[in-house]
Length: 204
Image (cartoon, rainbow, N blue to C red):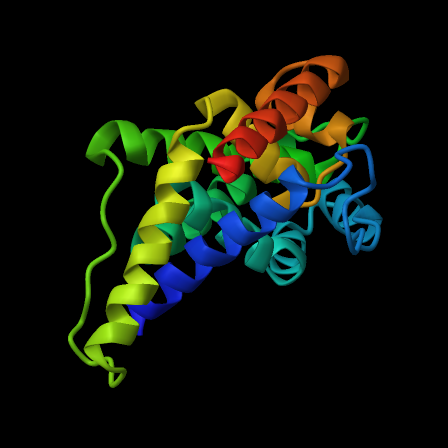
């Protein structure tokens, strides 16, 4: 159910952010993904279809989580992921292997999400009326989802993006910088400020 998935993603996002707000932000992201060298090699030999398939399998789910956290709508997040992969396929010739492929992908996703928000604004997740849970359970889930969205929205957009890329997409600080177009030191500062802001909000 679309509304259920949307709320779970939002709730998970703020739960993770709240845990990070209480933790040491200097640690490494969890579950560092395998090397993308095979994707880079596929791009270099002109196997665009193979490279796209590998990108979708390896990074599709994480791109979906990032887009969901940025947009707050499962439907728009799914569309943004598809648009990201299509844009990547069209732009493989422009990819430079001296940078991180996943940072390049997340940079595309971030720009796609920004365009969606500019065009439509942040949208509230709808409901399909097919949920079998009780009214109290539904209200509780929606309340927590709204709290999650509210807290994330109270973090400065550039810092929120850096936080989500660092811990949601599990990019290194260098890759976060590549994705948003800043240097590593600035990426670190943005994440640090986002965590500090979340600490304040969690205390409240």
